Image 1 (cartoon, rainbow over the protein chains, first blue to last red):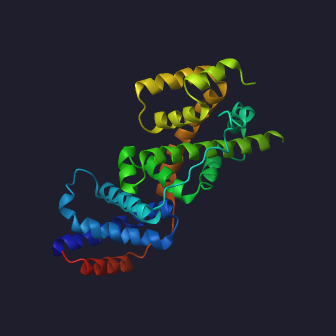
Image 2: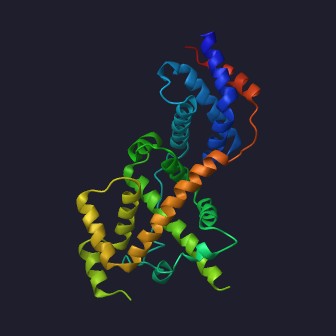
Image 3: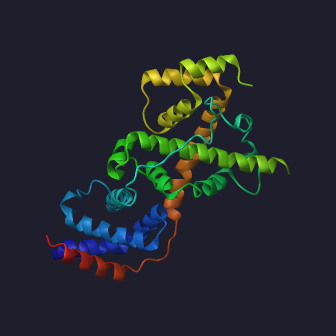
Length: 184
Length: 97
């Protein structure tokens, strides 16, 4: 047991910073992130038999972290999410901004001040936290979406609606930039 | 602007909001063969959703890049590992096994 404790202590030295960075990236809150990292190591110690050494310790610890983040998400957001896509479509289910959809995004390739990715990054941070965490988890985890739904206790229908709504918003946000820049 | 072909497709096969949902599923999960065919029909007839699909693919690859990069480089602050160890010890004592 002391041996195991020494191993965990060694893992704390080696991986705590990376885990903390990831937790903070997902939760955007220092004390929540710190709390989660502690819980990750506690869980790692308690479930140490499960670590087979097939993957690196960091990979294993990260998967525990993602699980813990999904857990805290479930506890924080208990209500059913309200996801409304009506701001994008009219009463005939047609696009409200059809013209901007057809604009060319090659503008970004020519732009010198901001790349497409930098702009998308800023648009991403404008998503509501409740959606953003889910989007981040989706792209970080190599898990199937059904596992994310299960861990966060979000129904599949709502999960897809949130992703759909997020992308609609991201696209519109990028569009606004490219339109405002074409004027110059 | 809205041509008749689009209207027919909207009505019988898939509406634009439904098409954007299917695009999402196609990019991140799974779509049944029938839904795939429906989406294809819609995209062939509706140039707006076709454009949305193209842009979604661009967003998709950029999202992968950004989120992977930022999740590694995002520097919150340096964590105090000594204090972290003490806190973990405390939590372990509270949860005897």
